Length: 318
Ligand code: UDP
Ligand code: MG
Image (cartoon, rainbow, N blue to C red; front, side):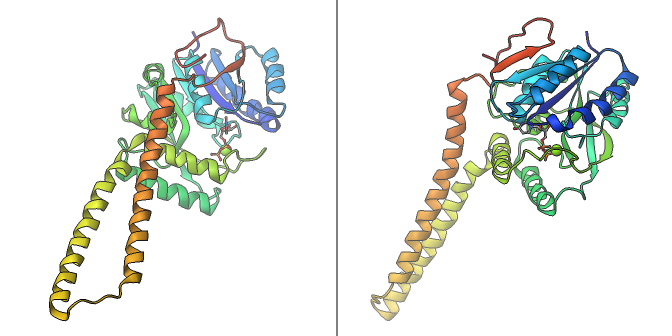
């Protein structure tokens, strides 16, 4: 059995592979000879897969799962977790923004008994101001309304004990917001701090649209607050309109009938129309997710599986 599994989702990372393995493999060697690196090629359109195959020929402990298309980082992570055999499992990014140098410290904490060791970013100055601001808002909101608080400065880079991985494998849901799932499992994590560097090679795979959908997934998958808030908004608007109605009755009794009112009627009709559409939209977000769940489609399709002992078929796989 492998002692240590590293899971690396990759989408068009060919340009950074040599730097990655040069930095990562020597670190792993100092910890144990029994390591495996599971590279999940998430539908790359560049040379990622062919380069990976060359690395696999050099060292069979570099294993490859290649998806039939791009399924997203969180699905790639899930596939990696399902194939990992290590007693400790560490997901990390391919762009060296998660420094391999701190892996020995994480392993030390695990050997000392920690079930989860989070790598916590202490310095995000190198991320863009917009990214820091939007991430800050998102995590503050999640902290208030989500089932389980998500640690702001922790990404997917963390060490998970095999028991935790077993627990995570039981999650059948299709919306794979992994940070949220990691937090949901519970256990008090141990912490190793590091400062996050800029991506050296390739480009960030996160477009603004992708980040927005990622945030919505997190929100809707881990909170029902957006569904419930409409009861309160509806109640407040009803009370306000009751108050306004009483005011109109009294004013009519005192001043007599007053016909003008086109502007105020239009405003309230449009306002109410808007409020109702927004609430319908939120309900739609949940229904879309329910629909996705009931279809029970496989989470991902593996086109090639290289370096694994036997073909492992798992629940969520075709
Ligand atoms: N990634 C992936 N599938 C995707 C997008 C990204 O597997 O659809 C991988 C990517 O190759 C990298 C990791 O996820 O290893 C983090 O991506 P990136 O560096 O673009 O994200 P950021 O560091 O900006 O959060
Ligand atoms: Mg990155």
